[in-house]
Amino acid sequence: MAATIHSASSFAQVTFTESSPKREVRAIWLTTLNGMDWPHTYAQSASSVEEQKKELCHLLDLYQQAGINTVLLQTRIRGTVIYPSAYEPWDKCLSGTSGCSPDYDPLAFAIDECHRRGMELHVWIVTMPAGKWNGPGCINLRKKFRNLIKRIGDEGYMNPEDSRTGDYLTKICTEITEKYDIDGINLDYIRYPEDWKRKVSEDQGRQYITSIVQKIHDAVKSLKPWVKMSCSPIGKYSDLPRSMSYNWNAYDRVCQDAQEWMHKGLMDELFPMMYFRDNNFYPFAMDWEENDYGRIVAPGLGIYFLSPQEQNWPLTDITREMEVLRQIGLGYTFFRSKFFTDNIKGIYNFTKNFNISPALVPIMTWEHKVPTDTVYNIYVSDHYPVDINNSRNLVIGRLPKKEMEKYLIKISPWHYAITEMDRFGYETPWIEKRSYRQDAEKKLKKVGIIR
Image (cartoon, rainbow, N blue to C red; front, side, top):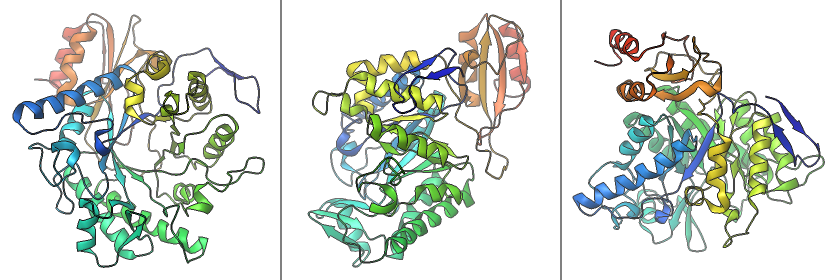
């Protein structure tokens, strides 16, 4: 990609002359805590269930239209969940009542709807925080485990130094991996609470957190090695030679050794929470890129700071970050959905234009390849044969077999190419290139994609 950085120190001006990349993570956090992003209606009747589903579909449509390809759905909130679990109660955000089923499976529904739109769904698991001390999630955990939950103020937290914490979180992640066709598990707050009075050394603290990550990783990968393990670390890993973190970093302050987790193969992907700007952002973004060990990094951008009710950042603070991240080969992640879909300061419109075409996520080249189910990518062009290496020709990626036909209807009478892709992201040479839709239908019927 042709790009010019006019100032190595500021990274402030980047000029792009080509289309958006074929592979890039474009992610968004979808917050369910208190229904902040979704849902805004309670599922208390057949009609309200449909309204809740419709609301989610509308958000996913907006994401797809803007080129988002990865949804991080908050699934474990504060010891409460949004799916039927053998371990934890329903969160009240769905039905309005803690422990009460919404009479459908929101996680299964969200996965299907994301996949229908060619997007990955990663379950966002809040790990250590258990919520209010007398809240339903915290009470459930206190009953299950004697002396495991520690109180800080009026909040409860799982003790990272107790081996039961890792064992229990592993059960949660295993349950989800076994039951659902997820694409990833995003561990949030996988660290010491900032106000924890730690009595062990920093090295010992990092070992405790890493042990939890190791347990979850090993269990998930033994079931489905294509499921991406990720976390959302503090945005600054550690102090840099010429940039200070001012005592708020992952490595020293909260014993979160995320770069080592990539090095050891415990993480496939990182979403660092880089809710900063200017010199608090760019040097630390480069640090993540320089120490990614070939894994995927998509820094979290604090688009909520665009709001006048927050810090009223100008839009250019975020758009420059997006441009630089693309230039250095990283993805990006928006925190959070509502500020994106509300188009605060024009962020949605900018993103829609920034993402000239859809993008596939990067290939997991480091994973041991085993057979997986197949998804499909569709390319179209006014030139024949269709160049599948030209990102502008990609119409949609990772499409399930059952969704193929409706997209073929849309592309007629363009020239087209269809490729297969496994769940690790490996793409086959095209399975068919033709100029007419009827030829596409014949081929797709032959390989069983449509009937």
